[in-house]
Length: 422
Ligand code: SAH
Image (tube, rainbow, N blue to C red; front, side, top):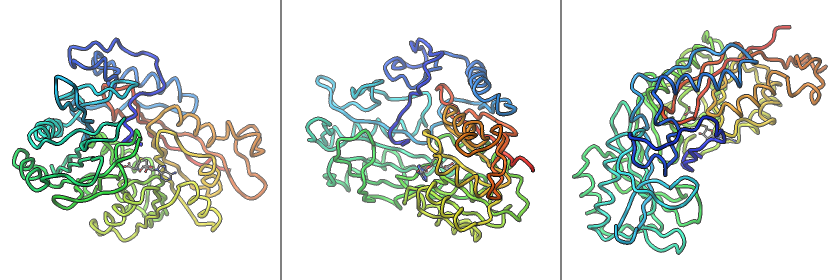
């Protein structure tokens, strides 16, 4: 998903020339569609996009921007390759290809992470470690993933190798940690498949605990290599505060945190709810979420590993009383299975967090009844009782875009839906 590094949205509208003074590889990379645009203009453009797309559903508030929009990515990925004449290079895939463009520093990325990636390139040369060749399957070093805890400063380095054995492992770890004593853990991940995914299944911790911790909204969160964690910590705090504000919790609610990752939203809200139930597909993330509840001494939160849609159907079947649902699906958005069960569960409020306004628009249409009318037999798409006692109509009360990805055209949006009262 995130590891797939899919940087380009389907929206081509408004692309800049991408020949930038700020970045020598902007054109080849294609990741920063707005690199030559002043930050204020970037915000205005995103605001306009969300308004055009979503204003028919409800009020669009002003986008929440950053004060300092550079170097925000706490997770940095680099691919390694061998170029004749140059030797080992590290950087990014050229837009729409598998050619590697050499990058030493990036306007979006944490600077320590970038420095570590360069050091690994130099060490690979001196340790005579060969880079992995995607066509032949020969070689070792494939990718490096660096994660930095925004508050704690803890750093995790994941070395993605084509096979499990890193020669002179001890010396390599020693040399890398000497150059960057801030590194708290190093993990070897094995990926020998022909795939665009960065991480493989197998993992071996070769230094430290195998995870980092970070502090967000006053809670401590453990993050494993394969777990999702929002890449822009400064904006994530603002996003989660908005989510909790929209939920209007009083301490009496049963709350679902769907697509919960390592449990961040649910655990940040738990002290204001009666009970939190989290669901997430990634088993490592669920394990982190369970431990995160324990670390923060939160006793009213349970986490389940399941497909969110299937889980919601089970909840609806067992007629579980649900008051508030947070949903934060991947870019592809939610599913009709999930949303049908959500409508049957009939919570008072739904807080929808989205990293793709286009799938958000599609799902809002469904949840508000506009695209469900005929299928569900609703009158005027207003979501009337289906004859089985279910109120299935929601209205979007507010929409707030949050700029989680400055210099790119990606947009995060949060919105609150309330039950239409009978
Ligand atoms: N709310 C979390 C994670 C959001 S990202 C946070 O703010 O950090 C979306 C999450 O949905 C990822 O953790 C991904 O693993 C998970 N996911 C993707 N498809 C899913 C599905 N079908 N069912 C449950 N979780 C899913």
